[in-house]
Length: 99
Length: 287
Image (cartoon, rainbow over all chains, first blue to last red; front, side, top):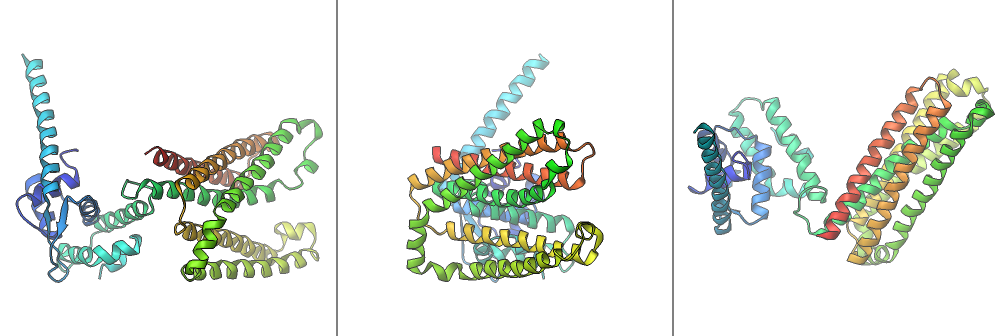
């Protein structure tokens, strides 16, 4: 999973609490500096919901919040661990190259 | 209102997420118009979602759904190839009469390759249809006609209308000179183009009938395996015909007509799509 993958960004955003589509877009832009397109966002929401990683809550008018599931939290932890490994590896190689 | 942007999405997706996405688009636009970049993002995502729902992309559908999607992509590609094949047949008629006998060796062999490919490909497609005859009858007995009748009637209507126009054009052609039939009479040329458009529409609509029906048939894994084999065979015949027709026109023409270039490009595109469908089915069979 890449750091700017829409599913990873959505799971990261939802890990701090349920959000609807517009709140997700604003939150992701604030912590990742990435403005997802609405089509891209809902494409990722569809896949995450199908895989049981997020779930919808009751709709308020046309705004439906989503929350991360237990499986989603485990998937996010695993993805972050992979990214951490990559960061550590890259950092140590850079240090070795500079030494 | 931004709801028209959802046309690219499958109906089931629109039913589930459509309102939410329109609400998001309107909140994001904040009373203004939706920017072009966002429109393109929504339409592009809709097309991807359609491919995912049909089983051509992603792994949301079970392997059986993906095998079927691959086979149906081959069938649709074959239909496009038939359109190109009809144009090829029209372009190549009487070619022996205008080609010196000494120049015909390679062209004759290539032309025979095209004909053989067309016969084998047609045989594979017909065999594929025959193999699902039993599930098709079961589907129709269980009320399936209700689900497909509007597609069938539309295809019959287009074919019937095209047949009537064609009969008129053929009768008319007998009263014209060779020059008038080949571009000299603009009214006749227009009627001929109507027949071409009707033929293409009829092939497209019958293909739609086949795809809509096949998606709803109860097919066993063994049956899907046989269909995948026939899809691969069809793809192979398409590749053979594309190569053979290219060899044929390079041996016959010194200056290349635009029509032949277009026909070859359609053949190439259809063959590439069919190969994609075959790969999709084979990979899903192994899953």
